Length: 158
Image (tube, rainbow, N blue to C red; front, side, top):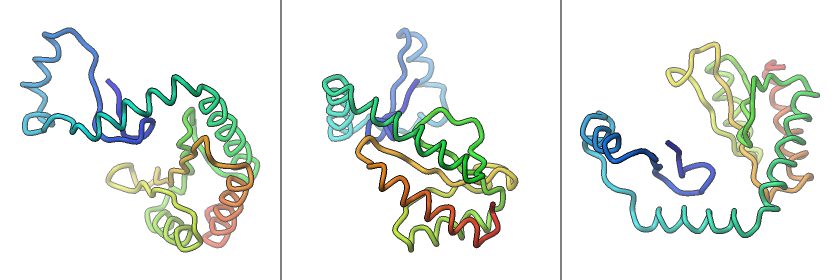
């Protein structure tokens, strides 16, 4: 099972299984009972992303370089990033209100992060998601990390 939403810039997902398993899921998985098939546009988007990944593997290497650079900088500054192994880096805040404040102030400063709060996670595990792309430059990453650090200090998160 996989998703097209984050890594392939689309929506929807897939399940790779034998026909019997897929038929069982289609008719018994409550979340799928009233769902529709993936749209042609979303399919085309996912296919185009897969072609780019195959034809331009250097993008994957650049994405991981960016990820490791940002992760090291965040840890150096004292952020709790938990156990992260993706280019979507969790930055734990562990407070609903501060998580919302951090994401709002950062957005006002030109930095987009996703707040993850209760009930999606427990009140003691709230976080922001810092998402990286291969096209981000080192300067952009440094700028974003500096902004995150500055706002987090003001809110007494670190």
